[in-house]
Length: 189
Image 1: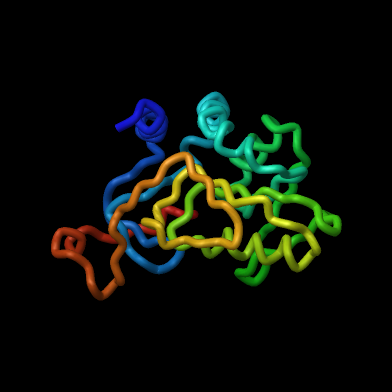
Image 2: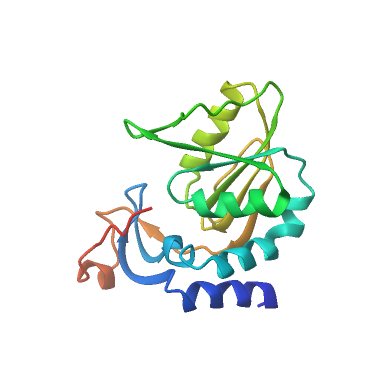
């Protein structure tokens, strides 16, 4: 394991952001592991360090604005914008769909970087991509702290991740025996 991956995992472990149990993911799938990035996002020094570790990967993308889906991407997106001296906006849920509100606008052809904390299937990140494009912007890429999609998340732009970790996910009616005896929890995403 390379030293960057080990440092990232240590940050997640030390902040209790990497959990083990029986979790219901936003997608409805179940997992034995869950990244609760809200735990790491309480500690700005750790968030700053995570983005410092991701900087070289993001630096090759050209963008003027960072857009983060609420809630998970808010703190991470703001830190990316701060470190790159970029404008920062976010999209938020309305009737369980992400929308651009609060007077935020995207200029025609404006280069926007989507920033998210964790993706499993990439649904919220894709919603954010669609919003940027529907408003005339150009998506420079999608940057995430953790890509747990196991290579299944695809976008029509570069996908940059600090950490790729593939934990198995299960349909609720197809759980392995060891998870059936653990009550599921939905920790929030």
